[in-house]
Length: 101
Length: 170
Image 1 (cartoon, rainbow over the protein chains, first blue to last red):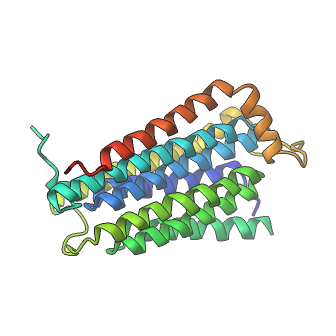
Image 2 (image 1 turned 60 degrees about the vertical axis):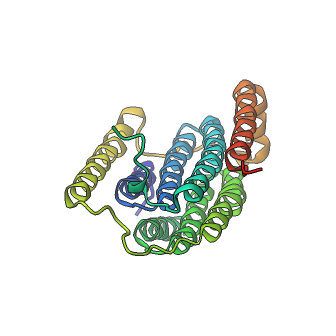
């Protein structure tokens, strides 16, 4: 078997799907954030695959920026989870509904 | 050899990603996340992106997951009753949406490649492809503005996290 671009893209698609399913299915906020990380990582894999396909490093630079955004997102997200736990003593997404109409 | 490593890396990544989503205990999820990120780093290496692979290990597995573990331990969540959403309709809808995403992405992955180029790797990538030097040259030449924006973003994230998590009770 010869490994081609499509194989990497399919792996990326599977990882993204698992992450999306995690975001939609899980109730624990921490695990939802972890699933978001999975999705960002799958996007990174696609970027690096395309960089390899085109023979330029532009995709890898974009992957670097995605990592930066992921780090920023996790820091702020975890801070919010901490506050919610401090005020409501829960990490369940279904309990955080005061802004729900 | 490359094929074997690819199969190994991708299978480990997918299985550990499933473990992240399905484990009851958040600590187990975080540990599976490390395994998944490391195996994706292996895929990065196979794609010739050495610098990104190193960053993946240092930034993701080293910093982000440790942060997750810190918060999981700090919160000490006791309610282990419900893992998934309670309503069956929500579960079904979630799975349907995820499946639709998968089908869409698989179509792009299989059909879109023929549109860009034949299914073969560009031969002349050279030894310096994906090293810290080549990525850095591109980063500090053509992407310098985006680089500065990213640094401001990180600063904003740090300030935001401190402002959010600060204990306001005097």
